[in-house]
Image 1 (cartoon, rainbow, N blue to C red):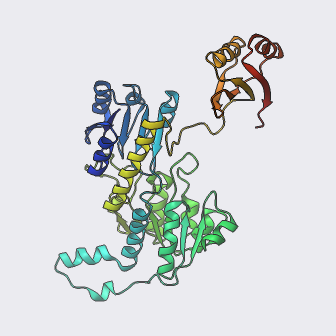
Image 2 (image 1 turned 120 degrees about the vertical axis):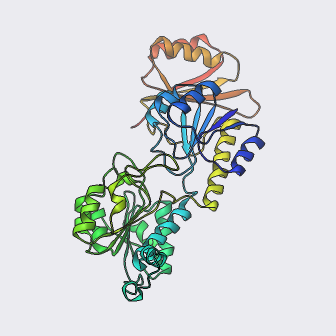
Length: 402
C-alpha cells in the first residue's frame, strides 16, 4: 500500500507506516497543481494531509482510496467530491485537544496581563510598570464556552483551576449534561456572550456554524471582555468582530482567521492583524510535540486498520441514512452461488442494493444475509427464489422504519 504524505508529518508516524508494510512517499511541500501531478504519477492508495487543501482534481488524478486529515478538522478537504468517488475521509479527533486548550488559556492570560505589549515595550528598552500593572485578573471571572466537544471539555478543568465559573452552549448540550460537566447551561450563543467575561469558541466548521458568531453575538458581550477563537476562522463574522473591538473595547485572542495562508509561511495581508486589541498567533493550536506525536500514532492506527480489515476508523463521510426502504433476510446454506443468484434476481427488478452483510454460523454450514434495498422485491421474485434454490432455507422481507 502506497501512502503519499503531502504535509509535514512526524518521523515516528513515517516509521510506523513503514513498520506495518506501507511504502511511504514523503513530499511535505506539495500543494495545488503539484499535488495533482504527484497523485497522477505516484498512484497512491492513501493521502495524508494536515492543512493542505484536497480538491476534486486531486481526488480524480489517481486511485486514492483514503484521505486522512492528520488533525481534528476536515474543512480543507472536498468531502463531497470524495464521497462521489467512494473515497474514505478520516481524521484524528481529540488528539490535539489538550494542546488547543493550552493555547486558548495562554491567549486569555496574555490578554489579561498584556504579555505581548510588555515584551515589545521591554525590547524597545522601555520600562513602564505603571502602565502594565493594570489587569483585571481571572479569579471569579466567568468563562463562556461556545462548543463543548473534546477541546471545550478540556477548557473546563483549566478554568476551574483559575477559579473561573463556566457557562456553556453547544448544539448537543443539554441541562443534564451541563450539570454533569459542572457548567451552567445556556440556551444560545448570545446568552453565553451576555453572561461571560471571557468567551472561548470551540466549534467545527460546517454549514450550520459558518459565521455563527456575528454582530448580535458581539453586541451581547460585555464591554471590554475577551474573545478567544482557536477553532476555525470562518465560524466568526470577522467584520463584526473588528467592529466590536473598536466600538465596545472587546479584546480578541485569535489563532485562526478566515483568510489565513494555507502554507506554513507566506504573506498575511488581512487588516485584522494590525488591530491594537488583537493578540494573534499563527494557527498553532495543535502544534505541540505531544499533540503531533499523538496525531501521528492515530494516523498510523487508521491506516493499519484500513490495510488489514478494509474498515476505516473515524470515517466522516459515510451516509447516516441510505435510501433503503426494505431489508431482505436470506437464511441459506453456505455454498457458492447462492447469494449471486439472489442478487441477479434483485437486479432483474431494477432494485438497488444499499447495504449488505453475510453472517456465517459456526461450522460454516449455514449463513444469514441481510440485504438492504431501495424498493420491495415482488412476491413473484421471492416465490421464484424459493422454488429455484434448495440452498435457500428461508426468505423474509422487512420494512425499514425511517
